Length: 178
Image 1: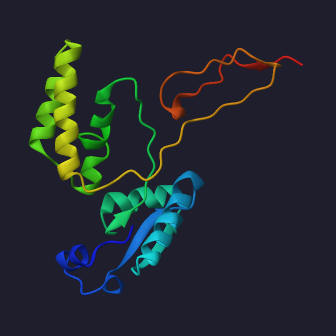
Image 2: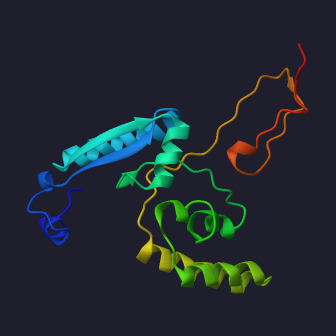
């Protein structure tokens, strides 16, 4: 889908090729870097001049925190067991929002209400309000969602999938029986 001429004009540009910026991502993890390359290709297809800058992971994180690039492609591994998982990305004093300068008092208040209410139906209403507000305000979008995949041989013993984010996999009680 190509941005409409009205959208480009509303952003202050006569034509897509007038929009020039650098897009930051990481070269360390292909699950993040490859979507960034696809995004750059889409921008080019729209006629926009976007230079992709790939940095090593720690440098990338420092650069994002410094806010020196107008846009970046990042990855996340949220825990979907509870709707409050997204507070890590959106709540003003949590992990991600401060790095991009996002803050909204109403969203913060709604998260606090959602965590405090034990009634599942009331929480559903609160998190729906968060969703609607987020769609109006948040200055980013999700490009790719992948499920974590795992595979093992019959001689792998003791492995247990932990139903949380992919970074929580542990092999402490796993062994090879062959």
